[in-house]
Image (cartoon, rainbow, N blue to C red; front, side, top):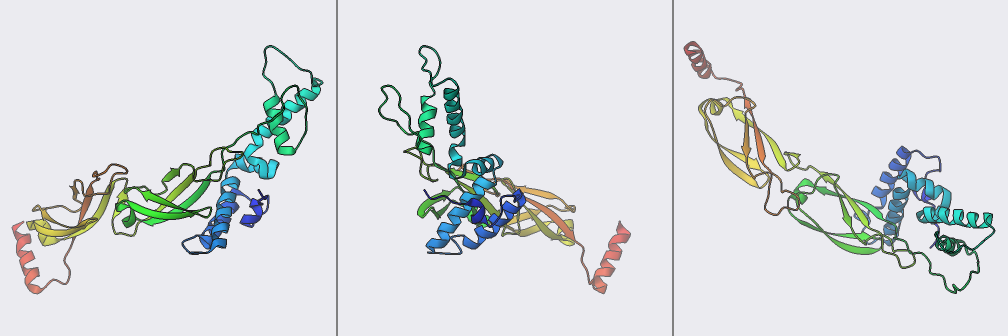
Length: 300
C-alpha cells in the first residue's frame, strides 16, 4: 500500500488546528463529491482520500498515532507492544523461560512482519502475520425532509464500488448509519472496515419537525375564530378539513394524531401534527363594518 500523506491531501500543515481540519475537509468534500462529479473516477479517488484523511486527523488519538507511525498508524498499539517486548527480551539476554508466564513471540512476530527483522527460535519454522480489521470510512449524505418521509433507495460510490443503500423513513438529521464491511479491506486477511454515513436533512417545507411531530402555524380570520367554521389545512400528506370551534382564542393548539412524521424503523407509526392558530385582525374596514363593530362594542 502506498503511503498517503493525509496532511497533504487536505492541504494543511502538521500544526493545523481541529478547526482548520474541519474547514479544509468540508471545502474539498464539496468540491469532489460524487454527486457533483458524476462518472469522474479521479474525483471519486480524491473524495475517498479526503474522507480517509479527515477520519484520521479529526480524531485526536488517531492523529497522534498517525504522526508517530505514519502509514502503520492503525497498528500503533501492536507496534509499541512489540517494541516493548523486544526491548524486554534484550534486557533479559534473550533467555528462554518455561512454565508460567506469557511468551512475547506474538509481539515479536508482529514486529518482524512490519519491519522485516529476522529472528531464529526453537522449532517454530513459520510465522503467521497478525490480522487486523480494515480502516473505517466516513461519509455524509444530504437529503431533503420530503425525501425521508418514505423509505428511500440510494446508490453510493465508495472506494470505487457502488453500494445500494435503503434509507428507512423517519431518519433524523445528523443520524449516523453503520454499513458493516463496506470500509477498507482488512490487513493480512482480517475483516473489512465499516462505512459510517452521517445524514444531513434539509427542511424544504413550511413545517417544523421535532422528533416525530410536525408543527405548523395557521392563520385564522377574526370572524371564523369568533363564530366557528370549517377550514382546509395543509399537512405533510395532503390537505385536511378542520372544524374550528366558536370563540377560538389566539395561539390555540390543535393536535392531529398520526398526521406527523414516520417513526424510524416502525412501519405504519407516525407522530402527531400540531397546529397553532394565529388570529388575524381585519384591516381596511368598510364604513358598514365599522358600524357593525361599534354596535357589537355597545352590546359588550
